[in-house]
Amino acid sequence: MQAVTMPRHYERKTTPKYDIESLCHAIQDVRSKQLTLGKAATKYSVPNTTLFKQVNQKVFKEPKKGRYSVFNKNQEDQLQRYIFDRCESFYGITPKSLRKIAFTFAEANKLKHKFNKESQLAGKDWYYSFKSRHPSISLRTPEET
Image (cartoon, rainbow, N blue to C red; front, top):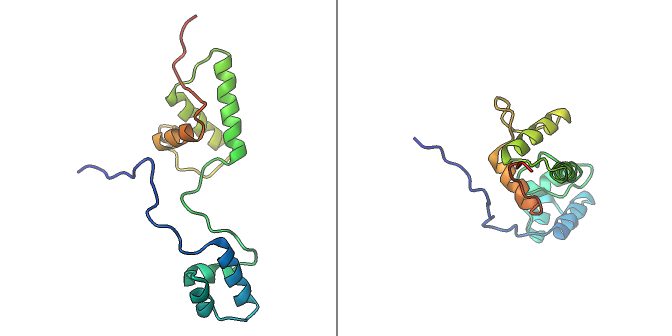
């Protein structure tokens, strides 16, 4: 039996029927007791569960879509600079070595990740998404001069 995998580039097929502004108005109306939770949800076209979760939080957090990323923007920039520095010193980086570097970087910073701990490599999906986020990086094997 063959394993089923997700596509590398998933495109969402539906869009939320509400925007952040209407969610904020609904939260304000419920907290100020002008409307009940259900009436605010129908008036502003916000799902009941989303409104319930946001009303019970002390601070408004914008709902996140998709999976969490292992590295934040600053850490990915550090990785990108490291790769550029190694390439400038004529030490080429292969895709496999980049995956190894990403794994050791995540372990050194004690980040929560789902990388393979047996092979100590970041996944191919992470590699392809990293390459799509940073198209200026070109990886190749080092050649003798």
